[in-house]
Each structure stands twice: as structure tokens, then as C-alpha cells.
Amino acid sequence: MDINLSGKKILVTGGAGFIGSNLCEELLRKNNQVVCLDNFATGKLENVELLKKDSNFKLIKGDIRNLEDCEKAVEGVDYVLHQAALGSVPRSIKDPVTSNDVNIGGFLNMLVASRDAGVKRFVYAASSSTYGDSESMPKVEDVIGKPLSPYAITKYVNELYADIFSSTYGLETIGLRYFNVFGRKQDPNGAYAAVIPKFVSQLMAGESPVINGDGTYSRDFTYIDNVIQANLLSLVASKKEAVKTVYNVAFGDRNTLNDLVGYLKEYLSEFNESIAKIEIKHGPNRAGDIPHSHASIEKAKDLLNYNPQFSLQKGLREAVKWYWENL
Image: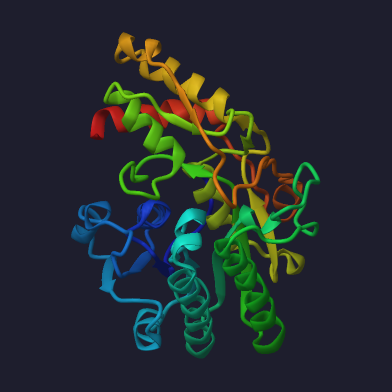
């Protein structure tokens, strides 16, 4: 990834999580100092175990709901990549209070701490869930609908707060609306596991995955390396109009859940032929789910020079190989 970013001190909140730990790795590879803040509610120590041996890596166990932890983490930091959040639409429906505390209260703490520490730029994980019930396709940044879950509300509020902190305090902010990110280190276990690692682990175990609904819901699945590229480009973007805004981060394509499972069976059967014969089951649609998701990535291409290299198929091949070697 040829992005000129080195010699900076960068805080990655949620740095022991799936996306965060991959960002930490890439930033260290580019010779930056990296501070990782994580409370390990969903992040895993194993994701950063090897990074701890690097003298440019600092791990802080703390919680973004605690302003003092945030203030400690941003000391001397040039940039913040804010990934810490409680993800999952179903989790937010079951426990909206905790999702609100982490995703809104914690987000505000990080903005305040970053402002007070003189951080140069605050790049944060936004979400495609913000599009809510908008039926327009592809999704364009300035056309959103009504949120369909507590999680979606929290991520939209993040965008509103970031905009205010840019306007009122001059803190440069960029929001990245992630579309169904997948790849290495994504946890296949737990009640709120994302669909791709969950299906991979089930197929590897010879079990039948259960698709919510008839499988015609579609998503713009986005491989982790595309997301890393977007984050790094956001840190180095120099155009004035590139900041104080939000971008879709996706591949710019969509595939149904039926397509997805077909690819997974095909790629996994290269390691174990019997996987090709596993039957797929269908269950009820999940509350709060958006039926279709397809991103326009023209804005990110134009203002960030974003150029995603991994389609769903190319990313799945990488992810399947990683899971086969590591699960």
C-alpha cells in the first residue's frame, strides 16, 4: 500500500479489535508510533500479542467511557483513528443503553480529549447502517433515511457530533461509513459474530449455516485491506473539502447472501471437498436489518484517491485461507 505516512504518533482506539489491530499492524509497518486503547470487551489480546514486541507500540487498557483514559491515550498524539465501539444491530436492540453509552458517550469523550490535546485529525468509524430505510441505490453520502436500530442511531449521532466539533472547535474530522467489513482476525465466535466468519467456521465444522430470510438480501461486502487504505488516505488527505465530511468505504458492488454462501462453499471445498455438499438453511429475517446495501464510492475516489483493490471474491479467497490456517 503506497501511502506516504511515517514518523507520526497515532492512536487507534479499539486497537485490539478486528479492524483496529489490522490498522495498528499497517501503521507500525510504515514506521509510525502506535498507541492502542482497548477495554477488551470485544477486542482480543491475541490480536496485538506480536505487536507488543515492537518498541513503537504502546498498549493502554482503558475504556472510552472514562474521560481520563481518553486523555491519557491522546497525549502527544498527531492523529486518532477511532474504531472503538459496540458493534452489532442485534446487540443494540437487546441492550440499547450500553450501546448508547459506548458509541455516543465514549465517542464524545474521545472528541473532547482530542480537541484538548491538539490532535491534528480525528478519523472515525461510521457505519452504512446510517442509511436506514432509504431505498435509493447506490447509497450516496448526502441521502440517508430513518435509522432502523439503536446502533444506527448511535453512529449517525457520531457524525453530527464530529461535524459540530469541526465547526465549533476546528478539530479536523473524517467519518468512514464502513460497509460490511470482513477479513483476517474477524472473530467467528459469540452471539454477535459477523456473517462471513460465522459461516466460514460453521462450514469448516461441517455444519449448515442459517441465512436470515430467503438469501436475497444484498450487501456491499468490503475486505479489510480496502478499509485500511481508506483510513490511511484519510490521514494524509490535503484537500480542504476532504475533511469535515463522511465517506462510504466499500468496494462499490453488491452480492446477495446466497451468492456469498456459494462463494464460501466453493473456496472452502478446495481445502475439503465435502464442504461443497453441505446444505444451507434459512431462518426468519432479522429485526433492524437493511434489505439492500450498495455504496457509491465516487466521493472517496475523488477526494481521497480511494482505489479499493479487493472485490468480494478476491477478499474471500484471502479470508478463507487465513481462517483455514488459523481456526
